[in-house]
Length: 332
Ligand code: TXA
Ligand code: MG
Image 1 (spheres, rainbow, N blue to C red):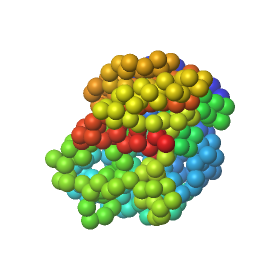
Image 2 (cartoon, rainbow, N blue to C red; image 1 turned 90 degrees about the vertical axis):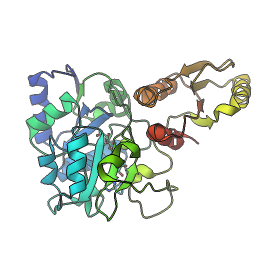
Image 3 (spheres, protein in one colour; image 1 turned 90 degrees about the horizontal axis):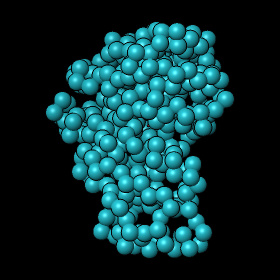
């Protein structure tokens, strides 16, 4: 495995060529997108895609997002390209939005977990776009982490989680959005929000009207329209507990007790908490800034050996829906 540093704005052509060659040969290449790092493979090469599932420890019922360089590339992968897709693509691509549409037969069932639909996205990162243009193939890329663990927002996170199991990591520095793309299902009568992200229902509604926002599903419930909706996901190793802002004293008491019993405690807070927590992190009070730092904060608390992570609940207004969702899923 090798790691190549690339300029995030003007990636070096040699690095891109090397990564594209590896992808064509069936290799696995981790690369930055604006959301999180992806673990890429040629979507049309079932052996390479099989490796993604193995390396991630990902169950085969969890379908992958296919990345392409532009909307035209997306149209080649789907059966229909409805008005809603055209409008969303025009408004948000390249960007942190994934749309789900009926797939063409040539998309392997392995990618879509046997579903008749495929998820497609044009990422807004110069490194990802340069790579997609150079390789000129659809690239399947889930987040480059092990199944259920915290997604990577730096090349170091990828190295820590997947190390020697990938052929190449393109290191383009930290990602800017910080949480995974918003996933919208356009294959039915009405658009459905399958996974919230930085683009909230309020951002999408002016373009395509009201979306259906289904409730999260408990893990054991089938069928699974989007395993991103699985209850526990994006989770650190330590136990993560969410507390309401009005219960700060209780949180301080919990921390005190844990520390007295020799446990290492971390926290994600919206303002300083009066408690002897070993690793408190005061997060920004704005959803985009919070999202950008969230996974790096969880990775660092994991690295510091935190056994308990106390997280102050964020607002439940639409702009916070993506962050809110990731915290709820990381909690237990
Ligand atoms: O921001 C992102 O989307 C990142 C970067 C690398 O692009 N990728 C990512 O991929 O988060 P992954 O595999 O970790 O999450 C894919 C999500 C899952 O929630 C999956 O269930 C959903 O997309 N998905 C994929 N194909 C689907 C389909 N055909 N129908 C419904 N949901 C689908
Ligand atoms: Mg993921």
